[in-house]
Image (cartoon, rainbow, N blue to C red; front, side, top):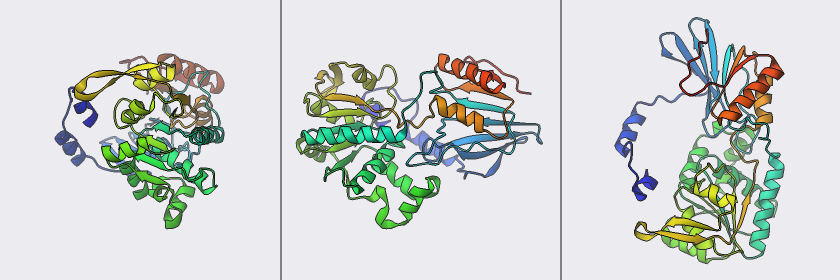
Length: 356
């Protein structure tokens, strides 16, 4: 909302509406069985995507029908979370994430992505440059933090400071407050105060424009800042000033949607329009190195999605592929049908499907 206000965009609701909405929220723990209608009970399970993300298991009627809706799904172990739950009491229809369901959507192994990221950081800082990492405040930023802290312990960052800007600090505090939702390994580290990666002296919070200016004028550093797609936020302040210098590097570790500033830069634009003082548009020259490191996604790639259905227990009678580009949903549905001989569907918008 702050970004929308700064950019003079109309707001569909105000902050009071959000407070009112939160008053009506009922938090549930994983595994809690809750009635949401006279004949529907739901249970939430870990989806592995971000903190608290949930797969919804709906038990309809007295055993009449069981539906699982994955939402955003990560069926792989990461530095933050355990893989998504794939075992349920009963399951007739599975409605699943298809973000990376296309035939070409194979991500590199996480270990390879991590090594590539650290290599970019090392090369850039050695030549005297700064590394700017646009990151989503929830999930991706903490993944990068744990990675950097781990490599610092191994003596691979040579005292390079890591600055956190935007909502990252607040979001990280929430991760620390709810360790039960994190992977067992990370949970054990958090309970040992001297090993909590989120409290490492490696990280420094940027508290305002004055300190931001000091970071920009200072020596080699890693700057992790919101927003992840460069749609607004403090990352634009860093980019505006650091982009013309070829010693610096911008590293994308998250998806850049079509039409976003991040996608334009990723495509190789060497001049991009930015909103300057008093709303004036200025052209920023992009001479800094632009890199994309795949493999940090909070979504499952094609292989992980197929493996999720393969491992799902009990085996679903029907799989509905949603939450993806039309061709990816169709591609995944077709492959699932061929591999597992179950009924599949990639529904169009507003299409109705009778389940029983």
